[in-house]
Length: 207
Image (cartoon, rainbow, N blue to C red; front, top):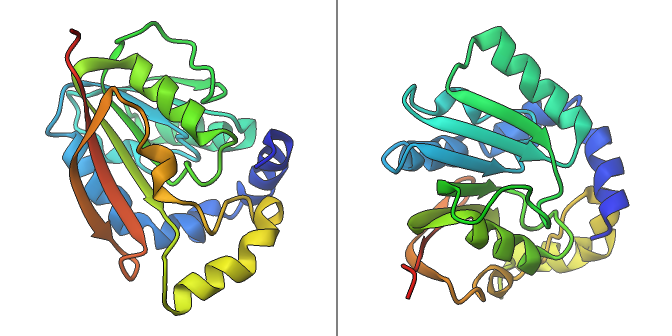
């Protein structure tokens, strides 16, 4: 996925995102945030988008959000102001491949529905692992390619339209599983139709 294509695509999606893809993924998003609220308080949301998840975080959390799209961030910032979300400490424009935070900065790092969007997802996972504290959690909710069935066929048919759609329809899970600092501790399917996968990783303690 080309970064310029991502930027153009999400500028196009921003005005309607909440009522389209955002609405479809609402149940999984809420369940993801519910889990994060049981973890350490300092949270980084990578790919905060229009801020749909922000109101769900508990008041005691300290949430930082980043996104590459200025259009998406503008909507997220408006939500924070309109809803008085004091637990949201900062929203910044940033490339997820090059996070501007020190090592071991966050108790929990979450990426919801962005791994099949970003260029170089392996590099994004590496950056997420870097800024997560040892013993902390990395949470990824995403659609991953199926190996069989009707939906697998649809994914293969739409794969050539990646840059137009703004995401990889045939994105393989293996692309987020390769960082040796992260161990999968939880995996489950989320709506709609079990199309989304909820993954929790724990960052290994320093040797």
